[in-house]
Length: 306
Image (cartoon, rainbow, N blue to C red; front, side):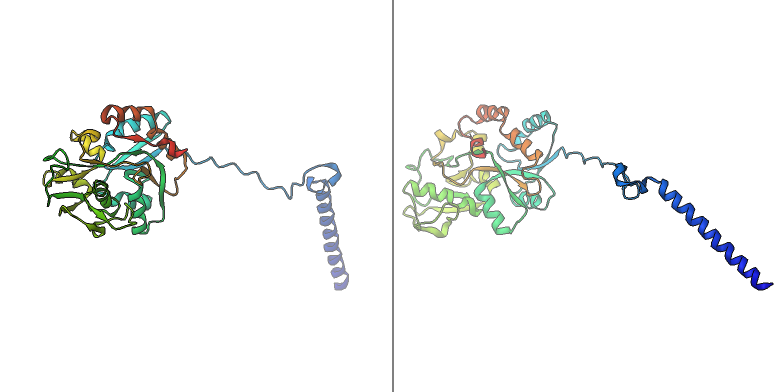
């Protein structure tokens, strides 16, 4: 009696398995996944669920821009803000009162851009500091620097042994020396470039001039303590000089490497925000301000950005 019972139980399991298998085949046959390719029906089994498209990140409309509070840079802040607002951008103006930090801050990505320097200074600073993540974004202006005096009207009046104030930084140090050389008052080493010339390159000093090297931001104050002093054009105009009339010597030449620039972090070079900043710098409102405040002492350089 045990053997037939086992046989019946086994048979029951076999029948149940066949029934389930048949049900499975029936379901497969009726499912869209089992449809014939000729029917054109898509295979549900192989289709991935549709993914909702992620919304694009909103464009950064804030420009963190470092500007020195010396010269005319700080004077154009409000104009830049108004011009940028027309294109939907906000200028966050950052003031750093030295010429060392602005490039480092932009290089580190803590600001987008800066404008306080000319290209010669920028190139030398980047090389000396080994900065890798900052580049010139566009040119702005050229302002011929000069030698001025509160005591004398020309170099014919300047006595031998006079004290002359010049910038201490390497990129500008040679500018005063080249002006003196061009006037025949100094002799410099043959072949030395203006951006590399220093007091060590003087080979002849017949008038026994003495030199006082000072930080850029101290040049204006130093003018009271020297016989002749170097001034940037913007500074000269601010304290009442007309460069083309009052300078004892004035830079000339279109090839001088002292074109003003805006430098930017490499991650935003060519971005919409930097293009908007360039547009603001090249606006008619900025040109009108320069003309009204500084006359012909400032040349705009938008033609070099084409």
